[in-house]
Structures are given as structure tokens and as C-alpha cells.
Length: 311
Image 1 (cartoon, rainbow, N blue to C red):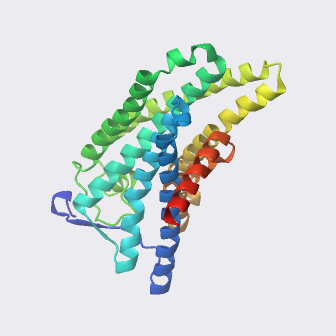
Image 2 (image 1 turned 60 degrees about the horizontal axis):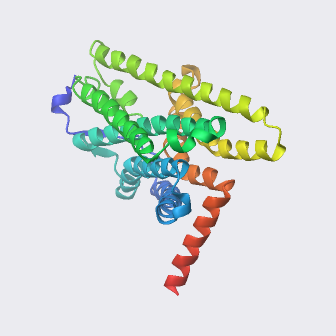
């Protein structure tokens, strides 16, 4: 029986045993990672550089892109490096940092998506008060609250998880360090504090979910009462990107951690982990720019500026 005080490294889940498959894994992850970096980087630059995008909706979108960049950069580079070096190891401190930052960024993103639901509610249900309710100071406070809540949540969970004795080895059934997998290595009687923290976090998550549902219930009620078909179409276009991003974020994470144990397998766990940790950061910019003319125009101008400067 080993104790966490004697551990100096963890072993992550290996994608493949042969060198060819390891290089294929590296190539696939590199492609997804570069796509996420490029897409989110363009969103951040476009929002920061174009004055017409200096509105609450795009302010929150910029923060969403920052969180997506952070979350995918926390897990993917280490996995790619391990594939190139034909190893599975991650240091104890590196595992703690990875678990903390991934939990922090995902928690903050969920809080930010809740704030974005409030932004859509005010824009559609109370448009005359939009500038008052969502001024610069209010937006900064909401974004700061999202980041701070994620940081505090991650700090409590990570500190508690790594203070628990790990008595069942150092092999993680995941390609990155995450708290649920680390808890599987703990002693059977040593994780009651974490259970208590999970209950508190689940209550907060459920509270945010109820807030989002109620916000959209009022949004859809207001939209259906609009006499103009063009107005209804515009309102739905404003909400669809946020709903798509929220649905992708919640559904992938929920199914990965709440799937029936009867269908659980290492291969399925790996696929689901990739879906909820890598796909949302890479796809979110596409979902937000697909039906957004202002953002597409800003991105087009940005790309043209970059191309002409290189010529």
C-alpha cells in the first residue's frame, strides 16, 4: 500500500502501444490543438481590435475564448509530449497543477455561460434597460465573479484531493489528471470531505442550471409574443450560438462523468474524455461565428489585414 507522501509521479492512460499509433495520436491532437488556438485567438483579437464588438455579448465571448484556450492548453500539450517521448508519466506537482487548472477553467466557463444567459435575457426581455443593467462595470464584475468562483472551487477541491492519502497505486485511467480519477486512488474511508465539497459544488451547478432554464423560459416567451417574424428570427439567432455552446459543454461533461457503469470501458472513457476536454474549445468559436454577421465581418477584416501585411 503506497501513500501519496511517497509518490513522485503518476502514470497516465496510454493511447497506443505501437510507435505508429503514438505518432498518429500526436498528429490528431496537434491538429485539434492548433485549430483551437487559431480559432480562439482570432476571436480574442477580433473582439479586442474592433470597436463595433465592444459590447457585453462580445466581452463575455472574449472571456469564453480565453477559458477555452486555457483548458485545452492544460491537458493536450502534455499528452502530445508523452506520445512523442513514448512515456506515460507526469510528475506529482505537474498532476496537481493540471487537475487544478482544468477544474478551475471548466468551473469558470460554466459560471461565464450562466452570465451569458443573463446577457441574452436582458437583451431580449428588457432591451430598454440593457445599457443600465449591463454596463461596463457590471460586465467586469460578472466576469470577475466567474473567474473567482472557478478559482475558489478548484482550489478547495484540489487541495482536499491531494491531502487525501492515495493508497491504490499511481495509475490513472485518464490521459490527463482529473479529480474524479485521482479520488479512485484514495483510501476507502478518506474521501468524505471531498464528497461534502462535491455536494456543495453540485448544488451550485444545479443553481446555475435552474437560472439558465428560467432565463430561457422567459426569453422564449418574449420571442413568441413578438409580432414581427423578422424580430423573432433575429432574437433566435442571438440565442442559438449560446444554447449550442452550453449544450455541447454540459452534455459532453455530464455523459462523461454520469454514464451508466454497465457501458463503461477504457476505450469509451477515452473517447468521452476527448469529447468533453477538447471538442468544445475547438468548436465553440465556429458555433459563435456561424450565424453572427458582425463577428464574421470582423474576422474577415482581421484575416485580410494579416494577409496583406505578410505580402
